[in-house]
Length: 350
Image 1 (cartoon, rainbow, N blue to C red):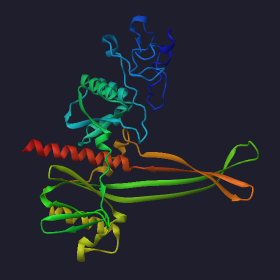
Image 2: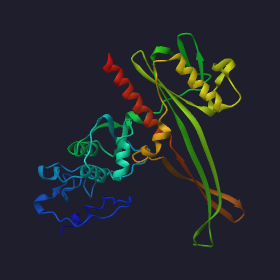
Image 3: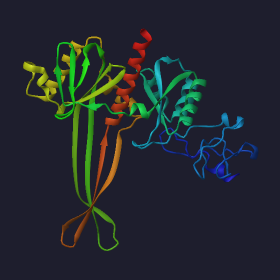
Image 4: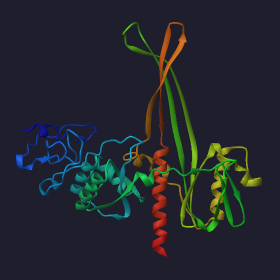
């Protein structure tokens, strides 16, 4: 068996989500695909070269054998999101559902929950456009129609707003004391998306036991936050404007006499005031309900970084690191996806 075949199935996931090698699948020499960059032969199931990482040429024989890798991407990587739309979802047979779930590295039950959720939902986040299109083609053959949305669009965080002013026909958005305010007519507000941003920060200090010994944890600190979030989208002067409000860092003076003492009650009153003044805007409050399903393709972002060395006392130095976990990127993708689809529906209705 060629050496390439030994690695051909390493990207496959078992039913429990653990990477497992599939049964040996030897390929004939004529089925192997030569890399244009390093000229080495690769298994026809691969999209990129095992040795140099270059994209492999697509041949007639390899087209039917290719399978997406769908490796987990870092938050900073630019991915391509394969999304199933409610109106484009057909009824899958049990056999096709199992095949689609295997392709997407999901269990069949999880795939069914996603397709019947009643919302546009992500199925996978691919590392390249070619891999995303391969997923789309494979799912189309199984009867599931999908669409690709790049991170370049979905990962764009709306502008943080610190205060609103309510005028008779205009919403005034203030991002800071020195910034020029943005003004949006009430009929131009098209979408309100509410949810929660949950984040956790863990700081760990470690120290080596003796010269060349193992490290042991000597201290740990954890901070957690849970804030309500509101994204407001408007279409003004041909520009799609997005604004984000976090419940803990907003001036609720625009509520006037309705302003209370607690941020939680003020946040609810703010959403109600916006809905009253922009009655034609869509209000999406399903994020919290759908969050477990979104996590299949869009998990919470986790990042660990070193804080360097810190002297505790003379002769004793600790190594410190911090790990942060947040679902803000996930909420942003969901919110932006809803914006794109609401604007598309409005354009189609004209």
